[in-house]
Length: 262
Ligand SMILES: Nc1ncnc2c1ncn2[C@@H]1O[C@H](COP(=O)(O)OP(=O)(O)OP(=O)(O)O)[C@@H](O)[C@H]1O
Image (cartoon, rainbow, N blue to C red; front, side):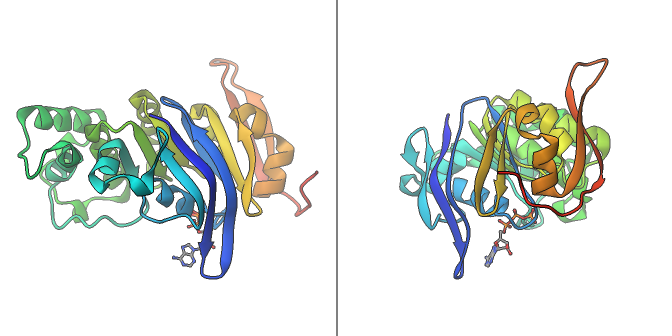
């Protein structure tokens, strides 16, 4: 399934946060949404699952405007990991992960053994099986992130919308989470602050700056030292890992404030 932002604009109160964002995420593609605090990443992501309506433009799922789709339809197709505290109503981890199957049920259908197998497999992949009987509010931030990913995998959604999913995760699990996300094979739009992680796991990155989408392309082409300095205010040196051949960014501290080159 393809996710498309077609000229999306975000306005909060009287302030235009971003305008005319045009971006297509193809099936199986991981696109990183990058930008400084407050540039509008979360607001844009919220329009993708109709938690908010754009002030301008449209969000399309395989060509269908999300505002015309039933909520259940969106819930079946789009899995979300957001920063907002979930309303978990005292559910256990196992119950919470199984909620990923709810949009697939007809009416008030019961969970099937296949649903429970999917949930079990997802919990094993994200390393939370041992937490199955704990309640959500008792989890650490990183444990909660893993459970949310398990729920998203259980949902078997074709679109993943992830808002800083590596927040709270320990170093090893940051890599593991991005690997699982890439393996899920969905059209994935993921807001990230970690540029090196974006370099390693995103097929393309989209940079928000100055109220719009300024750069879009493969991370090793977009995340040049000049761009990283101008947009993120940090000195960076690109490098290639001698063993893996992967592109990385060495970040060496805050840059002197300066204008972005034309
Ligand atoms: N409901 C709201 N009412 C008013 N302003 C809002 C609202 N939600 C967000 N904003 C403002 O809109 C701007 C964009 O917020 P948003 O959360 O989308 O940014 P972000 O890029 O996700 O930031 P961060 O990297 O800090 O998570 C910010 O200046 C924020 O204060």
